[in-house]
Length: 192
Image (cartoon, rainbow, N blue to C red; front, side):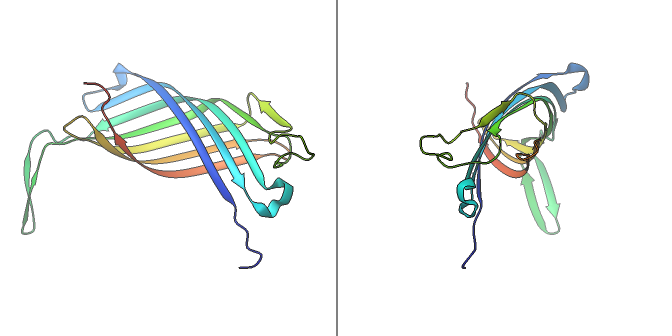
C-alpha cells in the first residue's frame, strides 16, 4: 500500500526482586511477602515516516516497593474422578497462584529533551545528543498474576499476566506507556 508506514517498538527489560516473608500474614497455604523490585527498561522506537525523528531510545529505571501473596492449591493425594462416563485418575500435584503488586518509590528516566535524531542534527553529533537524566520523574505501577505448576523433579512451568504502566511528564517529551504481557516460563531448579 502506498503511503502506509509502520511503527516498531522494541522493549528490553531486566528485573530483580527480593521479598521477605511476613509470618503474621502467612499460613500453611498462603505466603505473603514484602520487599523491593528493581526494573531497568529500554524502549526502542522506529518510524521512518517521522524523518529526522525516526528513531528513539528511552531508558527507564524504577525502584519499586512490592507485596506478593502466593496461595497453594496442591493436591496432596491421588484422586479418582468420574465425569459422565469417563473416569480420570488424578495424581498428586503442586500448584500455586500468586499476585504481586508493585508501586514506584523512585522512577528515573534518561531521555532526550525534545526529539530523537538518528546520528544527531549535525555531522559528528551522537545518537543520544541532548539527553537528560531526571532522577525522579513520574510514577510507575506493575502487577503480576501467575499460575505455577511444580514438577516432581523440582522444575516447573508458569503462566503469567503482567500489567505495567509508566508515566514520565514533560511539556514536549511526555512518555506514557502501558504494557499487557502474557508470559510463559520454564522454571529450572538450580541447586540439589
